[in-house]
Structures are given as structure tokens and as C-alpha cells.
Image (cartoon, rainbow, N blue to C red):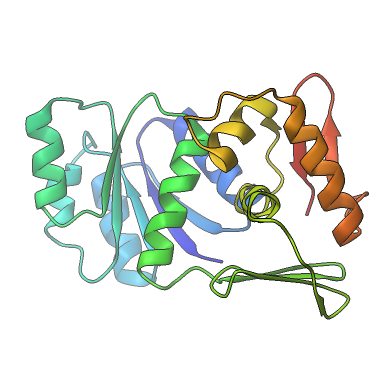
Amino acid sequence: MANILIVDDEEAINELVKLNLKLVGHSSDQAYDGREALDMLMRNQYDLILLDVMLPYVSGFELMKKIKDTPVIFMTAKDRIEDKIQGLTSGAEDYIVKPFEILELIARINIVLRRTKVEDTVFRIDDVEMDREAKIVRYQSEIVDLTPQEYNLMEVLVMNQNLALSREKLLELAWGYEYEGDTRTVDVHVQKLRKKLGLEERIKTVYKVGYRLEV
């Protein structure tokens, strides 16, 4: 997975992002102001930078001018269209406005890493191997015939491993915003994945919430 630098002077947000990056398998370093971030960039290599705009000493926009060849996602409370345009035209890959859902941030990170070819497209757990580039899932070295919807659900669980996802969120991510069916369809598809891939002990039911792929 990726090595990510988090640059945000709000300690609570910095810690929350670091915790959730760790849960989904990424490593990360933390900086709390622009000078500290510059120092860390001189000493270390990163696959991605999560960058606030309003930082002590050196702003995120100023810092962006000094970043070479490392993709950046701005995460900031500055929500004016002028700020978004400045952020994106400065060379950033994305711009997310606070407050944001951590699942949205993880999804945007995955998109950028996939685009920059940093993300590992092969996921392995127990006897299961998922090749997300080839869209193939194997169980005990044999290709498993998953329906498109079963595959979509499995991919969402993998991309958000160790995070508890509500049935409504799973419908949104794996079925799409336009889906208007019953949330019980999630339960049915989870049971099929558990059976087909031997993941009874890995896809956990989270009481009164939904499901989590435990890695």
C-alpha cells in the first residue's frame, strides 16, 4: 500500500486521518505546519500528500509550489469556488472540503493512487486472491464465478477493509446512488460472498450497523 504524508494543523483531524489510513493498510507521517512538511519532504519519499491550505508559517498553496512529482489532495475548510480553482490549477489531483466523511476521503485517495499506479491491485486474504485490474477473484487458486454485483460488493469491502460500513453506505458504494431496493439485498449478497469465498470469519456483522471486512 501507499506511504502518505498528512499535513494539517488540526490535531484531531490529523490523528483521525492517520488512524483510518492505518486501518485500510496505508502507512503515514504527520506534519502540523508548512515548515515541518517541507522538512519531511526533503528527507522522505511519499506516494501521496494530504494537504491543508491554512497552515502556520507556509500555506498549503505556497507549499504546493515546492512539491515535485508527488500527487496531492487538498483537504481544507476553504470552500469558495475561487479556492477550489486555485487548488486544482496548482497541480493538485483533488480538493475535498471539510467537514468530509472519512469514507469519501479514502475513496478519493484510492482513485488518485490507482491513477498514479501506486496502489497494489492484487489483494490477498486467507485463501482468497482478488486481482482488481483483471477483475478476477480466486479461492484456493480456483477462479470463482462472482456476479457483477457480488464483485462490486467485494471490491467495496476490500477498499474499505477494517472499516464498519452501514447497509445504506454499501448500497451507495456498491450498487450506486440510483439504487432504490431494500437494504436486505446487502445481507443476501454478503452471505453469498461468505459462502463462495470462505470468508465467514472475515466479513463480520457489525451489530445495528452493517458489515466490516476484518483484515
